[in-house]
Structure formats: C-alpha cells, structure tokens
Image 1 (tube, rainbow, N blue to C red):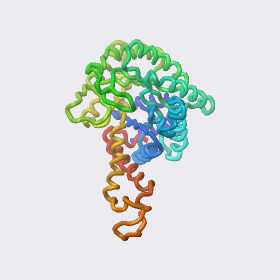
Image 2: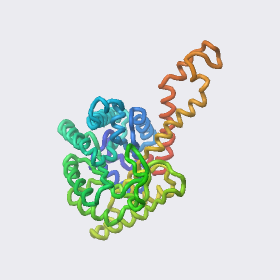
Image 3: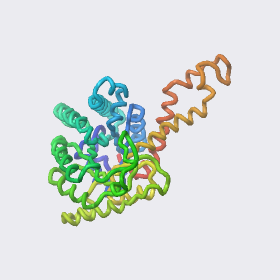
Image 4: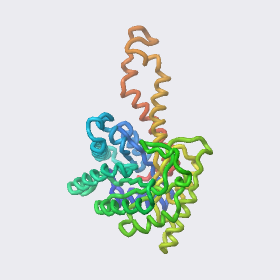
Length: 361
C-alpha cells in the first residue's frame, strides 16, 4: 500500500516526520515494531527485515545496551555514563550511515532513561544539537524519559523541561505514565504494587494538558498491565480499555474533533496475544516495544544450528567424516551468527504482518 512513500525519505527520520507516520498509523490501524538493539548483529537484522518487508524500522538503545555496544568492560575503565553516551553515539552514527545503503526509513530512539540516567540524556542532547547544527537533523528521532516511579507532578515537570529542549531540535519525547512490570535492562518492577501497572486516565489528561502547551511532539507509554518479558498465559491481566478511556477523556476535555488524539506506546510487547495487540492498536498504540522475544529468536537460531551440527562443534579437528577433518567452516562466527540473524528476521516477518506495518514504503 506504500502509505508513507510520499513524505518519508530513506535514512533517519525527523521528529516531525515521525508524527506524520503516527498519524497515518492511527488512521490505517497499524503500529510499528520497536526493537532494542545491542550490537551490529541486532541492528543489521532489523534493517534487513525492514528492507525485505518494506516497513519503517524503529531501532532503540537502552542505557546498558549502549554500554554493551562499545564493550561491557568499558564502564569499568570509564564512568558508566560516559560509556553509555559513547556507545549510543557510535551506534546512532552507524545506523545513519548503513540505513542509506539499505535505503529505508529508520526511527532512532533511546529507551527508559530513568532519573539516575538523566546525565546520559543531557550529554546526548548536546550531541544532538551539534549534529543538528552540522547536518540540519539530529542524531536521534526520539528519546524516552521514564519517571513512572515518581509523582505525576514531578514526572511531568521534568518531562516538560526536556520537551522544551527537544522540540527546539525536532526531537520527539516519549514519557511513561504508570509502570511496566517485570524486569528489563536493570529496571526491576517485578514486585511493584498492582495498582501502578494500570495508568489512571486522569493522569494522562494531566500530562497531555501540560505537554501540549509546549509541543505536540510527544508520545505516551501508558500502562495497562504491561510486563517486560514473557509470562505464562493468565498471569498478566491486560486492560487496553484504559487507552480507550484516556483517548475519550482527553478528546472530550479539550473539545477536540479528533477522537483519538494520543499517540500511545506499548511497552513489554513480547509474549502478548494477537487479540490484545489488535485491540491496543485500535485504541491508538502506534509503537510496540520488543526485546525479550528478539533475544530468544537470536539465541534459538544459534541453538538450532548447534543441534544440527554439534558433531562438528566440539573440536577444531575431527568429525564424522574423519579424525583429521577440520571444522573451521562450522565454528566460524559468521556462520552461526547468521543463523541468529535469520531467526530474528523470520520472527519479525510475523510481527510486521501482525502489526499490519508491512508494505508501508
């Protein structure tokens, strides 16, 4: 259907174009898959899948994922904030360069910046400004601030400050209202009180009314029982009607003609039923985060390769073809890493069809 071909160019997307994409997404009832990446293997897998199935890739980096990109031990030799900054910048520059060769649009995002990690974001915004002054566009399309464990007043006051800075550089801000359960990237909400997993629509209205006075370039990760990781069916009770109620309240309170004014983000999308995905998209979810299922897909591809070839993988010499036969072509990292990449690509094929975001460009 090539819904976005007319206004989205290949390469890293701007904040303004991001909201054009989200407008089209809500109108046509699709969402984009946002993938947490930690290295060039995961980045290249997402880009290849997006190219193959003609969609817009969202590549995002967490704080610890950014550190891992430049080497986990670097944070022991340098301050961890510096290591995360260095990793995010190098990863972003890599995506800027390589996306031109894949010839597809890419949304670049940083994930779950907690209050402790705001110094990371502060430096990234300076780098964004430098990049903007040089090239007329920023390194990143969007940044997330997660202050969901703080009061709504403190959360929105801090987010308002950053939205002012970001909007001047054409960067989108993603905020979180209510907490995502489970544990991911060092954020452990596995023992959080049940009520915090469900956002109050009144809080969504409060956030909207404060932020819209500054800029329209923000998205909201509202919790409706979301949990990071994969969980047994029935253990997590999702209530996407919270999104519907929030849309209705904001639209009514502000006398908006648009009955679906909010751009929602679904955190903890791994392991969610097809029905819940479809319902959340209907209520304005335009971005769905995936991490755990991507990790499993990559590992499972390598695991299946091992099962198929394990007799060739226990020594450098010696296999069923002879005692002195070399096994180099079996343990070459380019071989088994490629199996992991292909497994991610096959998983994303199904995700793109489920989210109805294939054939966009």
